[in-house]
Length: 429
Image (cartoon, rainbow, N blue to C red; front, side):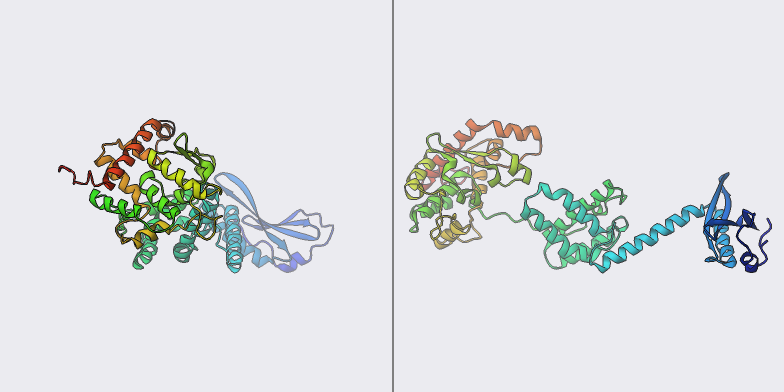
């Protein structure tokens, strides 16, 4: 097809208002549409792609000269010859330029670019944070900001590969914090799955790294599970020379299967001593945010021994709200370290026993020595179960079984304290 039919720019400059022509053809699809924008004329390029006729605007004359229009038309013809739509290519180029400009503006403002791992991670965090406690959410974001964002935060979330992710995780491992590396991998996996769900990534590269990290050393709270040693500890509690409030806490900690924080923050209005029941509000239990807000309270059946300790303690702290008030500040519960500090003072080291470890003591000895069904023990420990029906069943059932178990456990502790039932399993006492 003929090209370059317009002799020169002089021909175009000679166009006068009132010219009856609608367009001037330059050949091979390029033409100048006259008087399309006030006094200006518009360059157009007509082409066919997949049997469809299309027209592409190439700018206005005289802003775009004849030679510039021909160059742009040549570029468009090349795309058409390759089976590409020049109109779509232009839109994509504009979108890329706009995205780049936006990324530069965000970078200048110290913000992550749209579609980057950090941007998607923050969006995921904002989506999920309502279901977490504040402290749990803060730990996740602190981990991401300290270890993840500095390495892969600026990368497009859909472009990150498993080897790139592993390099980042190896840097965390090199500090000796293996558990943190595993938690970071899991958080990254959650972000990638969110990116897949929202159409910004094809897959989760963190899934490939489950076996690519060192195994963390599993650390449990130190706990005594030998009857003879537990008996020594219980007798030491009875002889504790500190305040009555602390002595009462020491006697109740091994008996009630609670976390130390749940015990020390107890309030008198939560107890029904006549009914031998302690009702702990949901918000004080170790649960997800929704469970703390809308979940049921945790019921603690009180054995006779616990009721006796609490009735004596009521004479000391019963006029206030807190059962285990602080020594100096009666409007605050005793320190979270009070029980552990008392055990250290009595000669029981931190690598042998902690306040939290009594839960493991009870779980182990109730099952192994007293033959209690593990499901009943787990219900009293307030451990959640994965099945929603099982979770509901645990909340509404087993109360009678738990009450019997708690009395059996308290009686067993008494026998240990008195020197009985201290033989290893398989041997007579």
